[in-house]
Image (tube, rainbow, N blue to C red; front, side, top):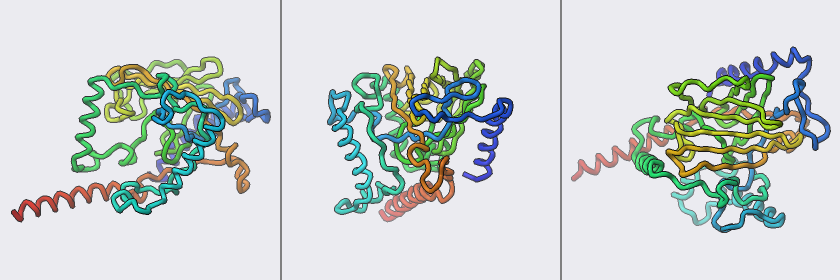
Length: 339
């Protein structure tokens, strides 16, 4: 993505962030007491900062934990160690063959060291089995159609996924891969969440305005926020049918909750509902950790920043996929012509 676009996004964020702060006379400041959640000058819980979304705990409960919902401290430490070792194992190519080597594509350099596991064995806390609910009949039909579509050679870039085309990763964002950071900005009337992956900015009004009409659909949906005590609740609707969160598209209804626990911890929870995709809603939750607490002061960097996500620069993967499909077609045509 071009630097001009990123600069425009950051300029917009700066404008809506700094204007109310000038009237207040000062910006939000974190308290020195890490046990007390900080507040903004206008009295709202201060959610601002760069937050790390990384954890060793998977979204769904692994089969080896069966009906075990919680880990002891010793089990949690051992599981974290296994997940971190698995990252390093990505660089092992011994005895795996060329096909496996190519399919693995990204080596360990691309993946951060997994963060510490939480006490639960899955990020999903509802249903109690830690699993995504079953698909509805319509949801299964959509899933089968997507699988069949992906098995066909892509005729053009539109046949590949949105993230391969550097368009969006969608919301909600679950941990995984790389660029697992969010930066939150606040004003009295808005919250902005800048997502490191694909550097997307969610601008969330807090003034009680209604959602846009049902005919206006967006990649990240239409978000509206409100405070419930010290928790920011964000409700998002109006997703486009081109997006895909684990099978859900335009029918997705997302409710997120952000609660500042202390200076270095932000509890995050989301509930997703789409009666055309899943048999019931489901909820996941885990803590986000401030990047400052993890690397603050390292190399004299007191306020660590996210890196630019320049997806299209050097994006030869998509070119390779399309080129490979055309090569397969030529080879198939040559084989047919020889008979």
